[in-house]
Structure formats: structure tokens, C-alpha cells
Length: 153
Image (tube, rainbow, N blue to C red):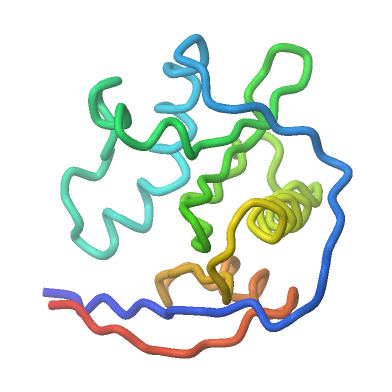
């Protein structure tokens, strides 16, 4: 069985701005959200042996989370999404068709800004699997530092 290593990271930078305009999750985008979420995490979940590989299969699975999920929509298409829970950034995803265009960085800035403006809890934190090297690099390049290494299995 493959050991899963995750990093807890904290934001150590200052105030950030974002040019993005995200909207709260809406059920009208559920099918797109589910598809993009599953596509973004499928390979990692499969390599690490985390089943089910396609995690989301129904609206009920996000019913208690949807008030904290924000969507980047352009021309009625879901480009990206991020969840913000108090002081934690979670599930930052970019539609594979739009990856490599800077959306991940801008989404991260949006989430940091959102938490700085809406939460009294600090520091801003996130968790990321060591396997996801691109995400780890993104976070390190944008003033997140590893504060804890968590091993599972």
C-alpha cells in the first residue's frame, strides 16, 4: 500500500489582490463541478490508491460544503473553483482545458484575499498531497510554507 504524505502549509505573505470575480456555488453548475473535480483529482487518487477514484457522484455529497465553494465562470463555462472554510483553502481546482494559463495563481490570490477579508482566524492554511508537485510548487512560490508533514497509511 502506498504511503500518502500531505503537507499542512501556512500563508506567510501579506495582503493580496485578485482580478477574478468568483460567484458562490450554484446547483446549476453541479454537473460541471463534479466532472472537473473528479478529473482534477482522479490521477492522484488512483496512484495513491484512494477509492473511489471519482469521488463525487451526487449533489448530496456537497450539500454541507456548497456554501463555502466559489466558482469562476466565464461565458457560462466553469473554469475553476475553490473552497474557503474559515481560515482554510481547500479543493482549488482548474478545469484541465484551462490549466497553465495562470488561473491557479489568481484563484489562490482570490482565496487568500477572501479569507483575509472575511475571517478572523489566522493564519491561512491549506493541505496538499506531496504527490501533487505542481500544487506544492504553486503554494511555495506564493508565500506558503510547510508547517507540518502528515503521513497516512
